Amino acid sequence: MSVIEVAPTRVDPVRWPDVAEVPRRPMRAAAARFLFERAVARLPLRVWIDGALRGDGGAKAPVMRIVRPDAFFRRVGAGGLIGFGEAYQAGDWEADDLTAVLTVFASRVSTLIPPALQRLRPLAIPRMPRAQRNTVAGAKRNIHRHYDLSNDLFATFLDETMVYSSAVFEQGPDGGPRADEHGLPEAQRRKIDRLLDLADVGPGTRLLEIGTGWGELALRAAERGADVHTITISAEQRDLAVARIAKAGLADRVRVELRDYRHVSGSYDAIVSVEMIEAVGEEYWPTYFGMLDRLLAPGGRVALQSITMPHDRMLAGRDTYTWIHKYIFPGGLIPSDDAVRKAAAATRLRVADSRSYGLHYAETLRLWRERFDRRADEVEALGFDHVFRRMWDLYLSWSEAGFRSGYLDVRQYLLMEA
Image 1: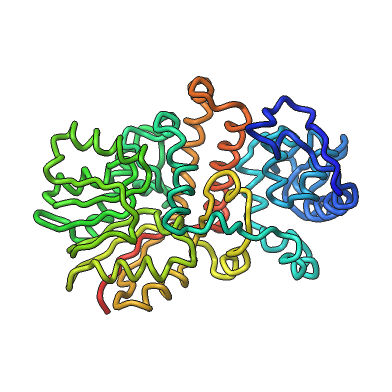
Image 2: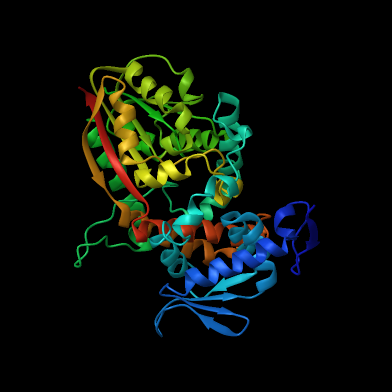
């Protein structure tokens, strides 16, 4: 039986029970310390543990400090990557540059654990709870936990467009995205316009948008003269989208519905969906792509934007319950490019075009994170405590690290009849 003790930081035990308490698992903690020190010894990092320096980095390597080694290794030993995240929420470790540290880990995620021990992974890693399955009721609960936190919270770090997906920036002199905060609204609208162009949206187009967000894509499609039907299962998003559309004088061209994608009927010339498939779940990908097939009129076009990950990593982690599932996106699974193409191929649709924007997402996340950190006082005033703010910092930094390392990508797809 595991003995639990209270963590040495002031954490609300009701709101954050697994952050407030440290599991006493001495054998697992010792094993975690051995594996961690073995792994970081080969990494371009400088890791301070008990006053000693670990890692294979030079003076410019990012710095990670294990502030409370006993608590850190007990959490990691008991919970793996979930414990690693909870240790950051509790303040058990720090980083001078959190994204840089996490980028090192993300770039070597498949080799951190020795191959012999990786074969034991299914025995040690928790599986996704059935409660997070994306049934109609489950999907609503899952979405509510993230997107209905507070529109005001999202407004602290998103730009005026309230778009919560990767922007597409202009190309800079070095060939990479030229990103700055002032140009973010334009970059978000550029992304939307590229998707609308892929779907050939113009005057009179019957457009279905799956996943309204806060309404920017519907607004731009309506400004082109399209007849827009947009659906969401987030009440907070729906309410703000309706208000924004009415303020723009476009309510006669846009219908916003609180509706699950499985319950939509009709026929549409174009369907657009931006970073919604990640919340569908592998179990329901056939249903999702079957819906696209069923609702698309002959000769129509589908434009999707999706985060993707390498196929082997998707297969390895598809049943795994992670820190992201526990605290950020319950029930989600990022597909691989292969998985998207395979799911589409089971219908009459095929991928006719695909474009990658991974580094653009890294820059988008950097801008969001910097804005979120600058407005920490506003976030606190909304009722989100320091554990939440550290959780959100870790989420934004880990996501950015995924795109910077190439572990994650984001793609725009055009689907058409075969």
